[in-house]
Amino acid sequence: MSSPRQVLAHTANVRVDLCSCALIHVHVGPVTLHLERGACETLATTLATAMVRLTQLEEGQPSLTLVPRPSESPN
Image 1 (cartoon, rainbow, N blue to C red):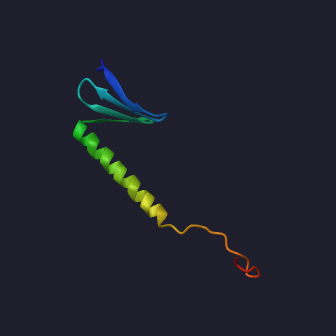
Image 2: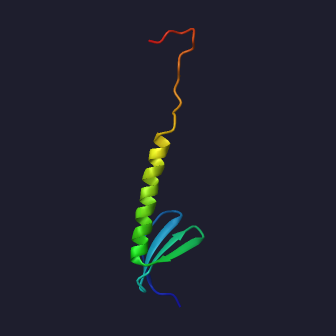
């Protein structure tokens, strides 16, 4: 028998439930994590930190730019 759950947040592929057993259930596709609140907070913080770092790494990548042909003079 499952415990009653309250949906805290959801998107098309992710759902976060609060269980009456005090666990937080994080459903991502076919995977479900059953976490205590502290572990869920740590996971959320770690994922947020990783996404910020990923953005910083992507910003450091060289970007493509258009350059004039050698026969053209820049304006």
